Length: 195
Ligand SMILES: Nc1nc2c(ncn2[C@@H]2O[C@H](COP(=O)(O)OP(=O)(O)OP(=O)(O)O)[C@@H](O)[C@H]2O)c(=O)[nH]1
Image (cartoon, rainbow, N blue to C red; front, top):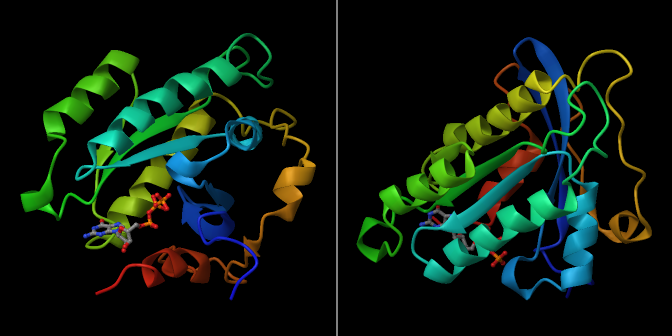
């Protein structure tokens, strides 16, 4: 028995990206069961967003559309600090489970169409088949944060952790950044996927 749901977990991931050691904190939200106030608080906490749907689940695609608009709405306006003030936070639309080709309900073109309409990057991946594809999503978000100027000295303002976020369990990262970029926390994603 556990006292929290595995849907609500902050994973720590350390990776070397473009020569820099990067410490990620990745909050996995509870998906469609998410209470809207809790979801809003989590969205305000995030600096960059991977909005993931399953190509086998049309409802998750519809939810992804809603989430993209919600992120834009909650982070909209000129409040965002740093050299990229006024810019929206990086969002990547991710279509997962592309390996399940016979169960597919959302064609690739539809995901691409959404991404084009919202002017967002689009990645179609399988977390089951490819670790590298999942890592590429975080690389894209990291590079976009850099492009917005968040890594220049003094420009990056980490949001104050809220009471809610303090309560969410954190999965430790491996202590050292392995050159290959793999870490305990990232492997833990895969542990949930049955072979
Ligand atoms: N075949 C396949 N299965 C996957 C893939 N990614 C995740 N799964 C499976 O899909 C199920 C849901 O995975 P989760 O990681 O819990 O997905 P989630 O988005 O957190 O789900 P929610 O609880 O709805 O938020 C699990 O049984 C996973 O093993 C994939 O790329 N391919």
